[in-house]
Length: 118
Image (tube, rainbow, N blue to C red; front, side, top):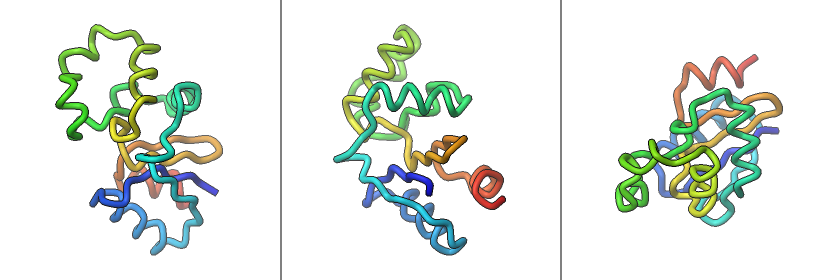
């Protein structure tokens, strides 16, 4: 079963969960605000994803803007970025979907169909 880290008040997360339900894809919902992944877990997901680390940041979120991360991230090491992501689930791009052999960030129907509808 896939894990879906999401936030109940996020419109994109609501659309993604609805899509999963409509496609009969079993999933475990995890509230990313209260149960966010720790640094080691994020490091594992990042390695598994094959994505650039920037794709794990919720660049449209308030904490991202308040911290001025668009200017700070380029000067931070990957370890520093992962440590920062682990401090606040609202910094993490959502939904964050974790399967046995893949990780997806955000809700892009084409990506989800390719990974989830085998």
